[in-house]
Length: 432
Picture (cartoon, rainbow, N blue to C red):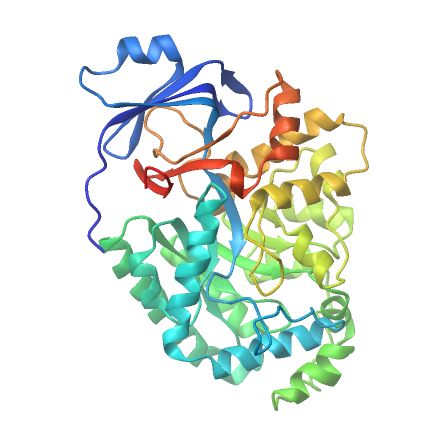
């Protein structure tokens, strides 16, 4: 993908959010060569910007950092019946996994690129500029990716004898993603051991070593469901009795991890800086604390967890103990849309602490911006000089201080997003 050079320009609005703790009314951001040149009070930016920069005015709008959807599967489509009506989510999480397996085995190759394109456009329409994407089967789709993306090459294999073969496949996928990155610098590679119940100890250790050797982040779906926790405890439950028999695999030899999840991940070598843990529903608070102490970062997906009946992440603990977390929607097969705004609202609804609602909304906005960049190891999340010119321009809900963020979370949806800009180039909206 050969990207055209980003044109310089100045965006001016009724309000500018440089980061969750810094706002200006009115404000402006000047950008050149895909980077933020300056951001601050309107008068200061207009006075200091180079002569001849074109200016775009957005009265009644707020310029905010582009949003991060830190966990998504863009190639998984909405599952529908022949009439196009969305199928209900199965009551059993194992049935859901089997639905995804059947889709992947039966998907027409050409449909994967279409799924990706439609989902990427939907993400852009909500003001999302950056995603943490679990790689789908069609790696070529990422060559034309217009989102900034950390694309995690996924490895799956539980039995010891498949570890070497799967490792080679993941290594080849990483090599291909890095070649794509050379042509499309919006894309960066990562590695994803799928889950602890689909990646055995041998493969997990190998993938952890590969991630460390390549200096790449590793992403793991963790503690998403009760069946997962049961399987890791003693090798029993629906995963052993239904999932593996349905795909013709024998896991009767597995008797559980035999240690705590934090201890297991540390022993394997996966618990380090750059480890990204997604879902985190069925973790006790001491486990969360131990994982954080080991260097892990977290992504919470409250709407997906609710849709599958898997429970809810402990938003209260994350917020009140100041453990940074990002937010992800998961795939369109699990949620109605790819809206980080809805994810923020869902997280707010789970909070049971003493933080006032308006202050909580500011923190959840931080989760969808600044904490996303830390989770994915990608730039952005704030509009400071030298940062990528990744911005979203949305209707200004009014209010000052924390009340502004409360209004932003309560009122913003797709129809309120006027423009999404990535790398200095309009990607969605009237100017795109």
